[in-house]
Image (tube, rainbow, N blue to C red; front, top):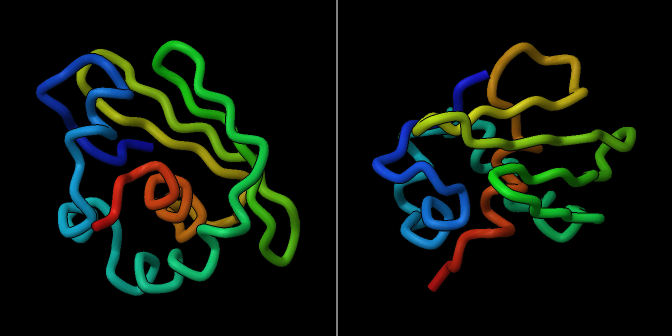
Length: 99
């Protein structure tokens, strides 16, 4: 599922250039609001090449993958909701420098 587009083709660059206020344009506000409580539950983060893999604890443990293909940020989650979910948003929030 597409999360966002980028001018860069490097996932780390995208994360480094991303500001918290921009997330409103990527995630539904309801999910983004809920994502903040899940940020501390993001675990086992592995960043390899242009891919992030991690787990997050919610009702269950969910495997999350966020990757960059070309200049698109794609995400997948085992959460049974067919949209960009609060867990994907929590992972991105956990990796963005919030001032």
